[in-house]
Image (cartoon, rainbow, N blue to C red; front, side, top):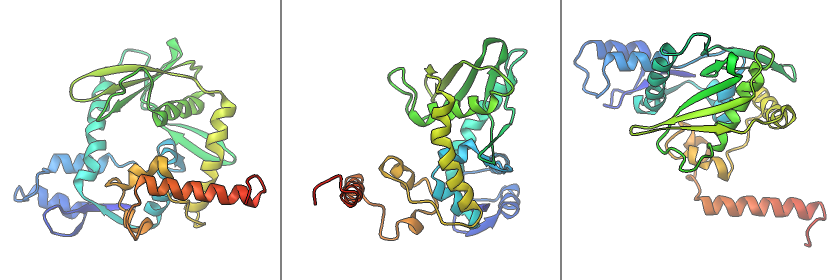
Length: 262
């Protein structure tokens, strides 16, 4: 669990109250003032059950974060905080009838899953999510994990609202781009969701930690996770090296099943 900030100016690990007390003195040497630090703390959501965002994250990271108290440099929370600022403005500017930041819950395989879609327009059967990104997609295709996220939100909202249109609004510091998202069938959503949900639930209940990320998620280990040293004590492998490992593991399984020559 995130317990506080790791001082970027060498004061060590500080509980949130300790860090905010320092910032309130206006004598703190770091670049983060009290309102920013306080808002970043408030932006950390602690939800009952499991959330869509946790399932889209590295499952091993989510499990470790639940087991171990951690302290993060403010810069590690700033990106999410900046995006939340924009979301707050958008929520306040919505038209009448829009459903903003409502929390939906649904039981899957006996496990409660929750999520907060940014906005639903019931009269238009449309769900929209806003994404602050470093790189807006160049074509008209959303990033795969974002497309999956809005489909999971749609699944959670289905008992309450009929949604047949999904859209992601990407924005950076210079432009905005709206991208339509293909609607996934319920069977396809549950095929991805159910095993992942069971895996994470078991880990959060004290069971075996999920496996380390595969090649597709290796980018998360490059400065985006406080547990990189725990998962990769000998250093994060290069993508080419991890690819060779995964191919060798697949070959070994296929040979054991008699599907490839020895």
